[in-house]
Length: 245
Image (cartoon, rainbow, N blue to C red; front, side, top):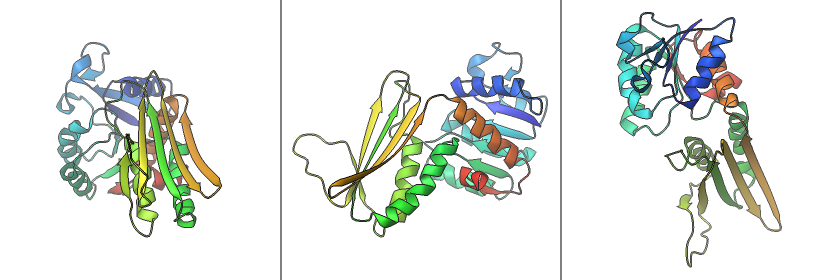
């Protein structure tokens, strides 16, 4: 299967290295204007590709989706979009494009996070009256906060609750906790790959669901599994849940 990678950052490089070692996958291009000349397969734009791939994986920046969408429609290329931070307008364009070409939108490509997301649905239904707090930690180079994964977890929680709660980002000074809120706390430091904890605090007992990423390879493996799966799908909007199911 021929694959193109959009973005040659940390994740993109790991993906390329992994594909190069694979017997069944073939890297036919890398899109990244910032790293021209660093690898013979890197080109400035999608229009510079010499081969139309079977599937594309985007691990670049959400702003590139505006360039990606018309190209994948025109060339019928199934695409895994693993970036976060899109505006509602761009998300609508992605949804519309999925009517023509298969698109997998992933805020996190690890198996563990996707299993936790599903588990939260069961827990929240049984713990409606408990206090809920979310803590997420990432390396000091991450620019968005909270992370896209944290936002997905929060959405899952709020969509499951009988009445949605207000999100409270951190606390300072005299700030008593409101019953109708979910506390959200963000940590940025060092080389933390990624850590997400959801805490359910009741009377005299606590349940904590936690996921730690010890290596970016869990995201690489999930992305390649997703891309391989997506290649055989009909046009539609998919998530990692569809793969793991």
